[in-house]
Amino acid sequence: MLDGGLVFDHRHWVCGEAEFRWSAPRHLIVLTERGTTARTCVSSEGRVMHDGRDGPGTLSFVPAHAERSGHFRDADLVYTALWLDPALGLPGCDRLAQLPMRINDTADAVVQALLKSLSAEMAAGRVPEAVYLEHLVSLVSLRIAGAMPAAPVRRMPGVGKRLLARLTDYIDSRLDTPLSLSDLAGVAGMPVDTFARRFKAETGMAPYAYVISRRVRRAQCLLRGSPMPISAMALELGFSSQSHFTSTFQRLTGTTPRSYRTHMGQDSDISS
Image (cartoon, rainbow, N blue to C red):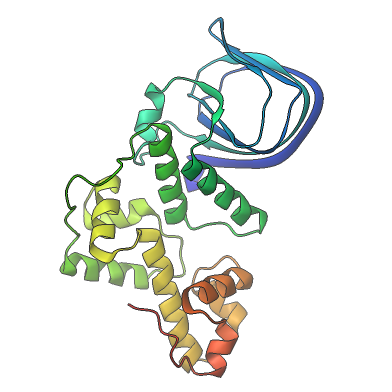
């Protein structure tokens, strides 16, 4: 995912005894969702980082190239892990290299919710949009780095009506293709983090949410005026499957595509 800059891992891991010693070229973020261990002992550079038990809701962060060693005993865990390329040019990711290793800390509630949400999407067979993944990775990285402000210090200017119109045309002409935050920031001629903040200031929506709203708006037009099968429409609009299309359409309009078509879309339009 994200052209190899992000690798997602979600699994149920069971073992009696396991010893390890390794380092990796990527940053590692791990959320323990369920389960525990009888004992987890982790050391780095001769210092014990954790000696106790794993448990639900704990978060670990290991910087790229940091060596760690230790052992697990009687592990029965369900976890979600993100492996991030240090060169991933997203907000917050550049700060991770300066952070110390953290093992089995209490997870930030926002990070926990984001990772569980991603895990649920993947378990349901829905591969999220690249622009959504970039936004999620940025939020998780910023939360872990402690860089999320409690409140905005000043009002961020928007992208402006003319640029928004150009971005909307760009999105509408590529609804059948994966769109990334980097793509949209490139059209705007802005750094990714600046673009994301200014876009939301202008529209009240994150870029990924705006892309989805445009796909659903196009779907409404097709459902009103085209006999295209709903399964084909899902692919035409860039959704990973018909079920993904149906659930997204229903979430934004309050009705299913089939029902919308039956009633000719009356009283179901979402705002442009």
